[in-house]
Image (tube, rainbow, N blue to C red; front, side, top):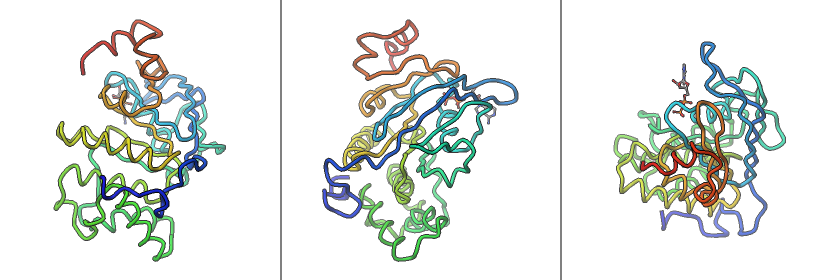
Length: 260
Ligand code: ADP
């Protein structure tokens, strides 16, 4: 993304030292059940404004469910979720100020890149000139400003995922939710994208990111703190260094000791 990233002072690039633009995310004893089966069990977790937190854990441990609960796509059976000062538990997804990117990018195939990125802004009823500026700005952040008029099928997987990230950023979310955003990409592109995401988080100084991955290396490279889930519960939380040096329990030690 080197040529596309905003330099300080560019539109959309907060000046260094600016107050965090992101809001914290607070899970307060959040439980989610599917057909009577509890898959998220009294999750309590506070993510600070501007923090990058990775959720890792075995398949089926509830990571995606936790993310979808923040997004508003699943309703907790109990507990509350706050974004910043706002209790969003009963708010619809569009009112939560979140941007989200999922594994299979889910761009609209019949829409050009520009219209894909503009989608959330149209939904918000933003004026045309604002939309045009934001689309440019977001695509620049991911190095895709030259692809405005392309259709998704004319882009590589990595490029599509960049556009999906631009689309999530276009609404200037307070919180960016990423669910396995890189796992459909091949290894080399994934490594590049990890670096790009790290840079994006630095450039957007203060955007709060919750990142679900099964890839420990991604998590440990990117995240300020790592949360490890097991059977719907939070099993460990800390910086990667802390978790490696002083795993709080045997499961954490074994999980981190395992190769990906
Ligand atoms: P992870 O992201 O850690 O792999 P998930 O949050 O996707 O875990 O899933 C947690 C559990 O909830 C799994 O057992 C999964 O099968 C179940 N689950 C997820 N979504 C649904 C759904 N829509 N209906 C029924 N069960 C679901």
